[in-house]
Amino acid sequence: MSREPRTLEEWKSTLVAALGLVIASFLAWYGLSRLSEAAAGDTIGTIAAVGLVIWIVSQSWFYMTQVKSPRRLLFLMGVSFIQVVPFLFAAVYGAFGYQDLCVLGAQGPADALYFSYVTFTTVGYGDLSPVGLCRALAAAEAVTGYILLGLFVAAAVTIYSHTHNRS
Figure 1 (cartoon, one colour):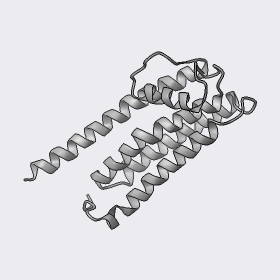
Figure 2 (tube, one colour; figure 1 turned 90 degrees about the vertical axis):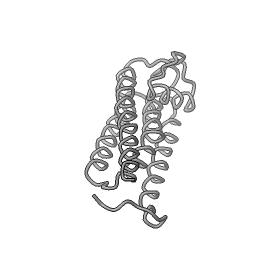
Figure 3 (cartoon, rainbow, N blue to C red; figure 1 turned 45 degrees about the horizontal axis):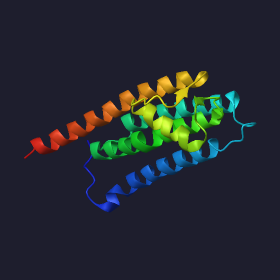
Figure 4 (tube, one colour; figure 1 turned 60 degrees about the vertical axis):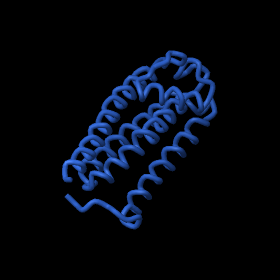
């Protein structure tokens, strides 16, 4: 295991990576959620969904094999799980279009983002609901939320207990 980062300079690459994740997910959400109804639909939505799966798998591989510092891993996991994944799922919902094509009741990008966070955290208020292919996508997001939030909490507890058992 590599030495834990202590200075801002040692955290720099991790902070840049986290900022890149945030910016990329925001741009994907912003771009895909603003497609015209003529452009959005099953083809664009399916391409965006496949891209999302590839992104999640590649990030998971990267975290498991390349990030050796537990604190860096926890930080990147937190950024990914709390901000990036729901934004990317919202981008995919937007890519399918609005006017009840993907999420019943969603009128625009903000509604898709709200639906994504409610689904990811498995709160499920019930005010918006997925239809068609987006039902499978919402189920995948809920399962992803269960797993990723559980891993994040487990990693945080492990790091905390390991740090406090040294004294």
